[in-house]
Length: 383
Image 1 (spheres, rainbow, N blue to C red):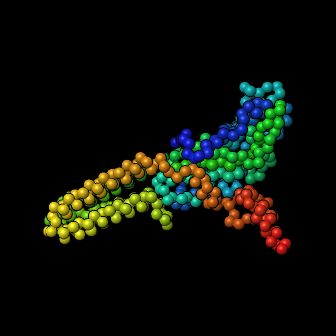
Image 2 (cartoon, rainbow, N blue to C red):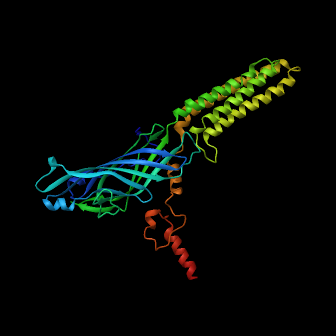
Image 3 (cartoon, rainbow, N blue to C red):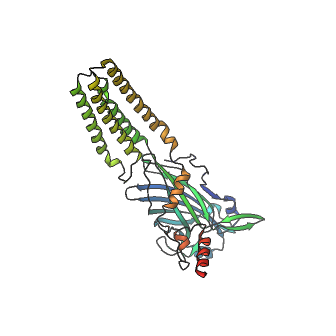
């Protein structure tokens, strides 16, 4: 499923660069990537993404020298993720090849496997960001090689997000270039970059849970509270209906446990079901209390119980309408999800690494206050 909606205060940037530069510079690559979410396992904290890339670039027509220089294939390097290249190849586009330049096209398919924490407090209205940090586009001799012989000079990149999972919807992707280089061409400047951060936004499809859980449990709750409208004399029958409704609701909750996340904190669904159980229990105690007053105030007690029943029915009907119609529109903002994602990055070191670690900035993004921290530490040591 493909979504084209704005979710955050700052609009997403799913395109980067200028495609016009490709026709003016040689050895510069354009990439159109379709990123599909193929697996999300919130219980185990895993995910899998399938990335299909289309390539286009131009080289000088130096006859056989060009084929020797570009016998490699495109590749990806992403620290913290397992990258599997299923296919990667390039070919000449003879329809656009001239005496001076050769136009190349190509295609690559990558499978990206990784892990991330999932926060499920708003289940089933939760949102998550799958962050592909430091996506490095490179040239390799063979698609399965671990090493690369050159970085790819990207001048145009577009990422289209999709989800092939019926339980998840994909939002717009967000691209950020890392250490881009400014090049000047005919008094015009352009950016060239080989490393990017790509954020994929996904949110859970909620309609299944609204229909199969929230709607059913609301009906069970209202039906279990119908003894409030029964005659006061039938106290035994009323208690049996309360007990049957309570057991039905508890059995239903454990019956759908496979569809609910097993987390040590309460989710939105857990709180919803718990309040329904509390409603039935409170209705039971209210009936017992008013039954003792029924002989002294029979008319008043009858009106109070009838009013309580209609209040419970109207209240839970209103709650269901809010959950079904309003809750999906007021999910957690993408800005908050992005902030939480930065704190939970599994590749981020808990402490600032010493200067001897050459890959410290690649594995984890150091904070902006790193230089100040180091300066304060050196100053304290000197004292």
